[in-house]
Amino acid sequence: MRAELIIEGGVGFFPGLARPIVVQAAGLSPDESAEFAKLVSAARAEGGTARPSAKKPVPDARSYRISIAGDDGKLELEAADPGVPPAFAALMTFLKQHGHR
Amino acid sequence: MCIGSRSGRAHSIYCILPPHMLAAIAKNGSAEQRSLAIDTLSADHTFRQFRSVQAATLQPRRAGQMPAVAPVVHRTIYTAKNTETLPGTIVRAEGAKKTKDPCVDEAYDGLGDTFEFYLEVFQRNSIDDAGMPLIGTVHFGDKYDNAFWNSQQMVFGDGDGELFNRFTISLDVIGHELTHGVTEHTAELAYSGQAGALNESVSDVFGSLIKQYTLKQTADKADWLIGAGLLAKGVKGVALRSMKEPGTAYDDPVLGKDPQPSTMSGYVQTTQDNGGVHINSGIPNRAFCLAALDIGGNAWEKAGRIWYETLNDSHIKATTGFKSFARLTVSNANRLFGTNSAESKAVTQAWHQVGVL
Image (cartoon, rainbow over all chains, first blue to last red; front, side, top):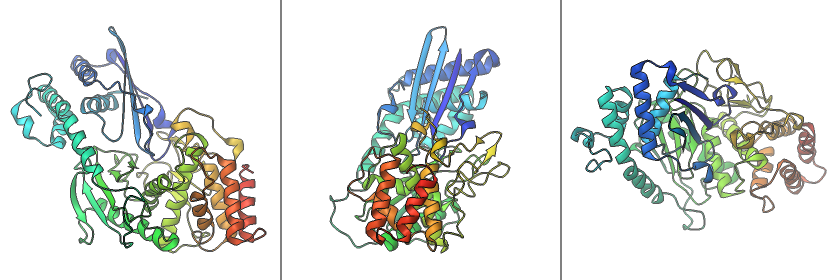
């Protein structure tokens, strides 16, 4: 499984922070890999497939897109400030901790 | 909200824990604790969202929907206690004493400075010109690297301490965010492409003017930086943006290099950042700075007045681009100071220098 997090928006645009954060399950320990799968499952169950980008953008608020590719196909989740759903937020925290740009 | 949670296995202790504790457990607990906390948070989220929306709709009212009130600032600062629940818990109401929390006091003072600037310089009664109460929430999220205005209130993150400091630290950033509210109640500029870059630029212009006004700085003494002090120690940079020299605010291994162009020849066509709203804003930012420096004195008195009148001009549209906006500033300079005035010439020349006219 591979996940990619893209963060957009905020009070400024920083080219270094605009690059995607990528996590490959193959590069994780067994425990981390299990946690990764669990967090993906929770985010999927939470149903964050609504596209916040379709709404009127909130100036300087952030939007987040997580793309996941695995054996059971592809999944794309989106969220935006304020009010990022908790399972999405937990997955995002994991990706920030274990991913690389 | 715990009964009947989706998984049906939320532990009773998680039902009484506040969301910020659940979030902490979801992040730092054992695998089982994290799992239970995530389940509980998921179930609780819809309810909290409902409460948040309900609370927000009870707060400010649109211009024209409320009777005229005396122009008196009314600030309320909340803390989100490092959750993402808005508005949070009240920590300082209008007239209350300073706290020992710099985030709370900087937010309180920054909202006050912004209110005072708009009232004293432009006789504007708060964001909506109808006495809108000013609400700010500090300590939003976990090491949240941002601040924003959500049409109802200000939201400030603490920063991660590695790249960014607390987002209440820069008065011009507070002024920038509140000015998004002013734009929303006046020109209603869209938030994409050139109109979006103008929306961002207007916020930078008035954010900087609020700082200059508070510090009583003339144009030549101002730093013309947005977010000075916001970048953490060790980051190679001085601010988020430079209005005087766009593209020079930072050049850091992690953040990258400041991408702002200073003239139209460097205009960036991109789908990122809502069409480069924080990138191409460097062009109108520099135009304002050049005009203000050319006119001299206090930038809020003449250049600021021209830009404010333009923001309120009936000819401005949501989709107004750089060239139309520039022409409107010249038109307002002519109206305010005369067709052949030094002010009008300074504004015209500034737009020529950045390649817009």
